[in-house]
Length: 312
Image (cartoon, rainbow, N blue to C red; front, top):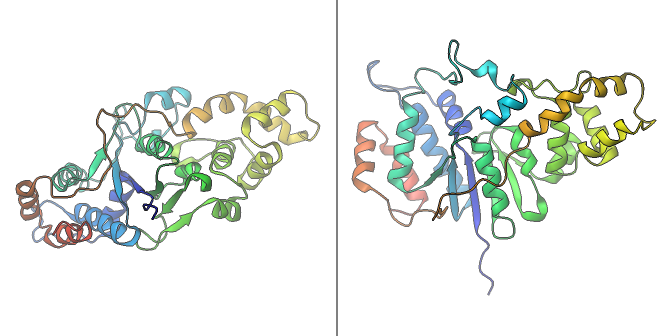
């Protein structure tokens, strides 16, 4: 009998704990108590994902650098609107969320769930590297509320996205190539990335090509196959590129030189020696987990997570 293929689940952690923070009520016993809604929500999300999708491996991917230098160098406006005023690169974060993030880190470590961030890179890059590294070895579910990661979708390599922006982790949109075709009229994850370069993304400070929206961007990528071939056709004077559209593309040459370095996730980061994504077979630090559970009133979500992981 053939062994079941491993299933690797990659969590876009910040996307999930921000959603938990805004989606889970703050029910502190007293105003002086530390908030715990993001912690509780994040733990509960993992439990739901484990029960619903049965991963055999999991990595909570982390933004060690939410605004990497190589992306800022390419396009200085990258994520500038998210910076805390008066700082040089500190991400704006709700006051009640900030102290909860280190506790999430501690809970993951105590349970034994692998967390991975790489200095100089975003969680997206960690996810991209792990997803590509699993090609041919494991099915991959990327859990995120960020469309940027649609570029990793690859039916041939069993990579899909569980998109939480609308239905959360309990009812995510399943993003595969058929979805990309229906929603965006592009056939692959790579084509989605090229379309996204042309379209731009105001939420990331990417201007796109003026006057070229999503539909036109998809039409151009479908006509030429990819962004590089489109640009070659533009340089060679392709008569199909004419009038205002040609002028807009020509005016955006500098942007089109730089934008792929920002939009495309890195897929070849060197991973730490001995890295393992395996789910824990036992609680890594029971004493510390008990301490965190009592200190932050996490009895219900921790108990649910341990049951989902079959650690109790």
